[in-house]
Length: 511
Image (cartoon, rainbow, N blue to C red; front, side):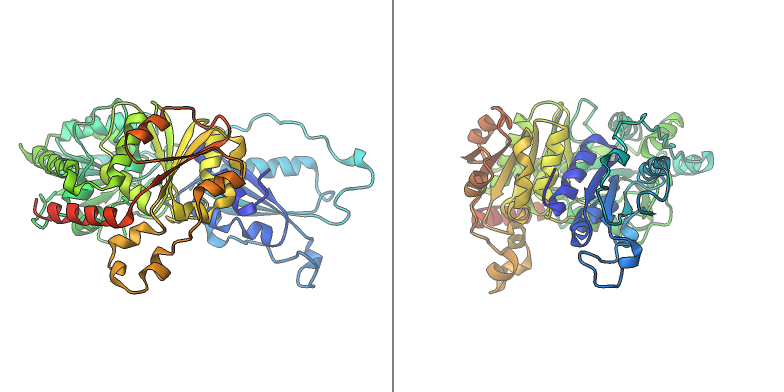
């Protein structure tokens, strides 16, 4: 029971991200279901299965001014993969409702994963006088839904193999729920093609036991250089749009060389310059390309990119260029146990992980709400994640914590750790031209003055303050949420951080 409907929907979103299957959310009529809307948008934009069951007043009360009655039909518009209107109880058999449940679960997972809305009308009396007529709840046999794998045609594989074989290219892996074995397969394909892999942190490719010698982790740094980058003949893009703005801009400049791989839904390609799209799940496409034994790129191609990546990595290690967020990310990579789950909030945290996470051999599962890239609901998402994956971690900013403070309430019953970077508001705007405006503090940074320590006390959660160095490393290896969601506050001097970031970028421009 999560009493805040907005929080409940994001909590379910976290559960669905952790488990991979649909999660049901139930609320009453009126504005209750409308509070789900931000989570519904995120689930729709990032292909997360949710079943949204809203109670409703009967049709005869619509447009009469009846209490707690609004028009809930297709409340979520095109953000829902499907809408089902249920008749009031007593008009159909119980088996009808069971069938609706099975079909809703199916629609939430195929052909395009996302939320499904079920609107359930009730007439008074909601609870009948004779309780014996209410069916006793009992679990039903598990429904099996066989989601088909989208495989490329032999012709499309042949055409793609001919295009990439022996030619200089780049593999880009954006965010996505990648299946087991894909990281290893992409690493093998990159080795076969002798090409670099630009791996967004939400792709998961930076961490794990697969070969990572072709995986670039400093692209957000070295792609800021003023000199022209090596020009690829092809760019094979898996998953969503990368987090880094400079990588996005580079992708836009690749023009017709860009080859998005899209199982279903929209093309993740804002530049609108791609002329070829491959409709396939990633793993069967990569496997088919490997079976074709393509030739490697010209000698020195991958080495040029690796050299740039090394140069970017060396820059960020220099003390005069290294912002405090880099040490924070390093502590996380070194300290989180193998197989840990880490939710990274939007705005500054995800960009810090993207810029400074260098990878490791142990698995680390990194997720974020980047479908619509909002800061709302992130605390609740972490709570839902930790409910399904005890011992999970979250990395958020102080403004994000404030925006979803009610997400700490269900945090009392989960085991996890929430690392809050307190830089006094919307720190990311200090890296944009807005910083020079006289209204910067009031209109962009928007500091709240609220203290995470007092928030933790309000919700009865453990709290500790830390610095982004060895102190944090020690805290992360201690007990993880034995008494609910543990909050670790990391103070970052925003002015110092902004100065270091800008110095790093100026140095990167000269690479």
